[in-house]
Image 1 (cartoon, helix red, strand yellow):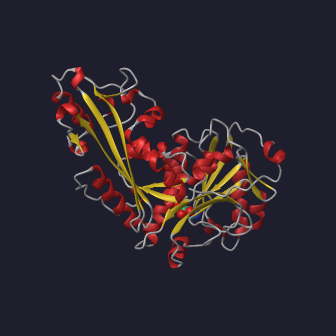
Image 2: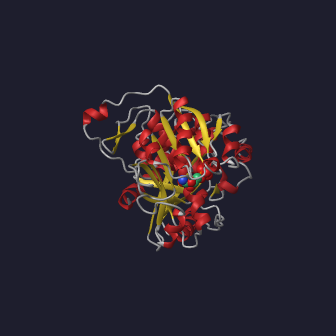
Image 3: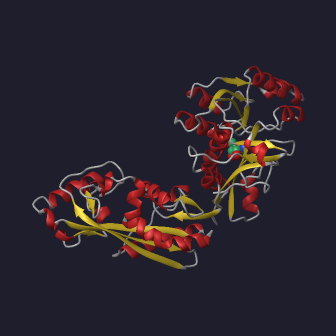
Length: 433
Ligand code: GRF
């Protein structure tokens, strides 16, 4: 979802922010270190290419986060606050010495639970960021999730901001939202927010270490994107949540790509771990899509988007159709079974059609639906690694002998049954935002 990015004081100031090769980063923690884990995992996966994470500093020798740092081979310095009783400045000064010794250019507070003294904040002004589990300026301070629940807000979230003297009050870099459910407690809401924290904080670090953001004149300045980072504005832009009512991560990935030009913050059902998927007991694509969309809209109180799809093979009298996902237990077995059933069917009798029906549904029952199809034929063997489901054995019309799983994602999405169905809903989706 969502972020606030302030304009630069002037175009010149913004454009004068230089490119960064590698930036020296320190991470301060106090507790379990799940944000630290998300950062180090991002670094390991290659999505923080400009962050040189030099040290993790912890004020509590018993913090579980210390083991997280060790697991990733990052040096840990414990600066135990209990050894500085009543001397907050002395504790901060000891931390500052570590940061200076390492020549740290970015300090990340990732669940650092101590108030910092003015001198420390001043020394690292403009190069220290914090993550907070609320949509600031709402609910600063402790137990932000509880505050949100007590205020009965519908949308909660997290904020990454520059650290200034004002507690949880510095200029905002980015925010991500989560829906609040009626039966949420502090834990369930906290877990949902944490999932978004784990995306927001590494992304903010990436922005800073790429020299894409700076604190200039008390405001966050963002350097315009380049082709190496095309998704930034989109990723931190949209506020309006939409639930993708499917637990199928392949589908989620595809739908995210298809809807990337709609200003919505897409959640998946993985954000709501306490709820089972509904039983798809319908006899048509529309019924099944409606079951899924209305179930998740009711649970979350948000607009929900579901699709149901299948492949209809002429030589099999239209089977497996609405039962395509249940034709055999795994994707490989489904393909093998279909190739076997069609073993002696000649090329001209292998016509088939992918069908998808998408349903968009509001919590109070307003509904839009659309159907998309993709015609082609079933191949004699699998080919291609893209896509999922029956894509490797489907040859769409108009692309020679190319299998659907061989087409690049954007081409597939422009002709696929799901792409065509969702395309028809985009006008409505854009109006939700
Ligand atoms: C997070 O909720 C963060 O927003 C807050 O402290 C918590 C730290 O969690 N500042 P973890 O130690 O990263 O798991």
